[in-house]
Image (tube, rainbow, N blue to C red; front, side):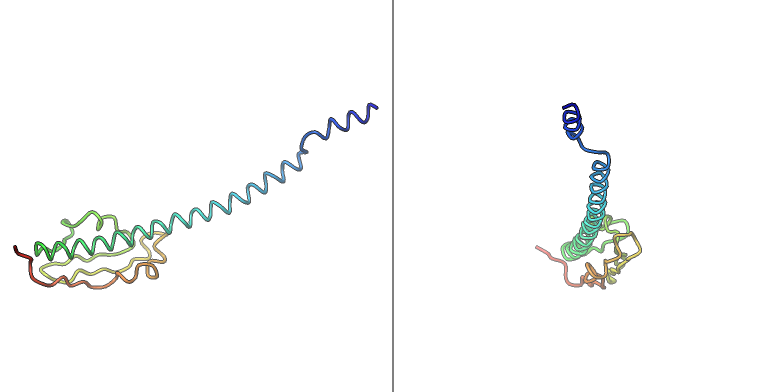
Length: 132
């Protein structure tokens, strides 16, 4: 009778081996999830950079069209300051506004040519000033 009571009491919990296997499995799943989250974070940063470059180009075009002024190194929109994966050569005296990709600027910029390469070109915002 005593042996039955002892064996049922011992079987009520998990063994150390079972707990170790559960911890190992949780660790493997967590490492997979963390690597996926890092990739997602980099994709979001790259997407934000492409968006900032598009806004910078749009703002430069609007400034030239509305006021006939060129963006410069010191006088440009905030979106231009937030751009990391592009190199901007600002227009001087009506010259072109040049944008090139810079895949070495940050780790997440490696795919900039595929994602935002369409923005890398020379922009000429010629035309007449709008007068009212």
